[in-house]
Amino acid sequence: MAFSSCLKFYPFSISQAVTLTHHSFSLNLTPPSSTISFASPHSAALSSTDVKLLDSLRSQPDDSAALRLFNLASKKPNFSPEPALYEEILLRLGRSGSFDDMKKILEDMKSSRCEMGTSPFLILIESYAQFELQDEILSVVDWMIDEFGLKPDTHFYNRMLNLLVDGNSLKLVEISHAKMSVWGIKPDVSTFNVLIKALCRAHQLRPAILMLEDMPSYGLVPDEKTFTTIMQGYIEEGDLDGALRIREQMVEFGCSWSNVSVNVIVHGFCKEGRVEDALNFIQEMSNQDGFFPDQYTFNTLVNGLCKAGHVKHAIEIMDVMLQEGYDPDVYTYNSVISGLCKLGEVKEAVEVLDQMITRDCSPNTVTYNTLISTLCKENQVEEATELARVLTSKGILPDDAAQLMDQMIMEGQKPDKYTYNSLLTHFCRGGDIKKAADIVQAMTSNGCEPDIVTYGTLISGLCKAGRVEVASKLLRSIQMKGIALTPHAYNPVIQGLFRKRKTTEAINLFREMLEQNEAAPDAVSYRIVFRGLCNGGGPIREAVDFLVELLEKGFVPEFSSLYMLAEGLLTLSMEETLVKLVNMVMQKARFSEEEVSMVKGLLKIRKFQDALATLGGVLDSRQPRRTYRSR
Image: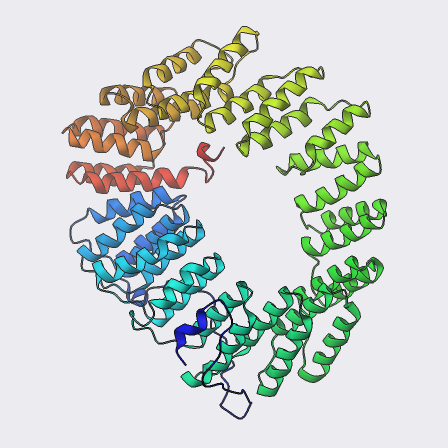
C-alpha cells in the first residue's frame, strides 16, 4: 500500500493487510534516541586555536557576548573555523531566538566554504520549535535545499517531524509527509513511530494501528516505542482495554518491556481508579520480566491512591520509595497534600509541606494553591496569609491571591506593605499593569501608604510595558508628594527614554539625579546612560566624555557598550582617542601588569580588534554573571 495514505487522519482500508506474528521477523530492541547531539564530526580534529575559541565561546556569560567574541575572531587573518565552532555559536543564538543572526552565521559558513551538513539546520529548526514557531520550519528545509544544495536525510526528517508533532502542528506533519518522496527520504522505524504518534495525537487510533501493520511491507519491525505509543493513545482516549489488547500483541511479538511501557499501563489503571489492578500488574511484571518500579511508577501509584482517597496507603508507598533510594519529588508531595486537603485533613497537609521543605524539595505554585484554597475554605485566613507571604517571598504567587487579600480584609486583617509590594512585584513582572495599579489603589484605600519601593516597582513595570510617558509622570507625582526618590525609581525611566530615542530627556533626568544626594546615580545609572549614548543616542564625542566621567566616578563600563564606542572611533580614524580610553579602563579595572602589557602590545602594532577581544575577555571574566539587564 502507499505509505502516504497512512497519514490521512481518518479510517481507511488496506489493500494488503499484514497480520503481525512474532515469527515474521527478528526484533531490534534498541529504541531510537529522542535527543540529538550537535557535536561536529570534525570536533575531534579541532586545532588548538579552535579548541581555545570553542572553550571561550562556551564560557561567555550571555549570547551577545559569545557572538561578539565570534565576530572579533572572524576578523583575524586566515580565520577558518571548523563546523563545531559555527554550531556552538548557533546553539547560543538559538537559545535567545536570534534567528536573523543564526541565518547570517549559516550564510557565513557557506561563503567561507566550511564543510556543511544538516546539523546546523537542525539547530535552527529546533530553535524555531523552542519558540513555538513551527510554521517557519518547512521554509528552512526549502532554504537548505535551494540555497545550500543540501537535502534532508532520514535522521533530519525524523527529528523535524517530531518537532512538528510535539508542537501539535499536525497539518504541517501532513505537508511534510507529502514532500517525503520529493526529498528522497526512505522511512525507518523512527519515521513510523513519529507518524504513529501524530495519528494518536489526532485521536486516529485505527489508522495508527494500520500503519503499524504496514511496517513489515517496508522491511521494518515495530519496536517497543511503536507499541507503547499506541497504548498511550488508547489510554488518553480512556480505553484501557484497547491498550491491554496492544500489550497482548506486543507480548506475542516477543518484544521486551522497559519501564516506560510498564509505566504507561500502570498510569492507565490508576487513571481509571483501578489502583489494585495496577499493583497486581506491577507484581506480575516483576515476577515475569524482572521489572522494578522507578520514580515515575511510584509517583503514579501515589497519585492514584490519593485520588481514590487512600492517602494513608499513598504515604506507605512513599516510605517504600525512600527505602528503595527514590526521593519523593514535588509531584509526589503535591499528590499527597491534595489528597489530604480533599479529606479535610489540613493540619496533616501542612505537616507534609513542612516535611517537604525539610527534605530540600521546593514547593511550587500548585502546592501553595492547594493549601491556601483549602485554608480559605476552612476560614483559617491567618494561616493562609502566612503561606502567601512565604510564597511571594519566593517569587511565586498563588492563583487566588486577590481572593485571599479580600478575605483578609473581611476578616479584619489588614495586609501590610510587604504583602502589597510582593503582589505588586509579581504583577509587574508578568506585565499586568492594570492589576499592579489596582494593588496600589487598594493599598491607599486600606490605609497602607505606598512607599518608594512600591512606586519604584510600578515605574519599572510601566517602563517594561513601554509606557515610559506614564512612568515619567508618576515620577514627578512622587516628587510632589515629598517622597525621596532613589536610583531604583529613576533608572527604568532613563532606560525607557533612551529606547525611545529621547536622548536629551534621558540625559536631563540623569543630570537631575546628580543634584540629589539620596538619588545620586549608581553603577546601573551610569551603565544605562553610557549604553544609550554608544547605541546611537548622541554624538560620539558625548559618549567619549561620558565614559571619562563614568571612570572618574569609580565605575567600570560594560564591554558591550565600550566595544560599540570603539568601533565608532575606529571608523572615524580616532585611534589615539581609543588608546587613551583603553588605558583608562585598564587602570580603573585594575588589570595586572601582564594583562596591560598584552593589550598595549596589540594596540602598538595596530591590531585593534585583537586588543579589544583581549580587553573584553578580561572585563567579562570579572563581571558577575547576573547583570542589571536581568533585574
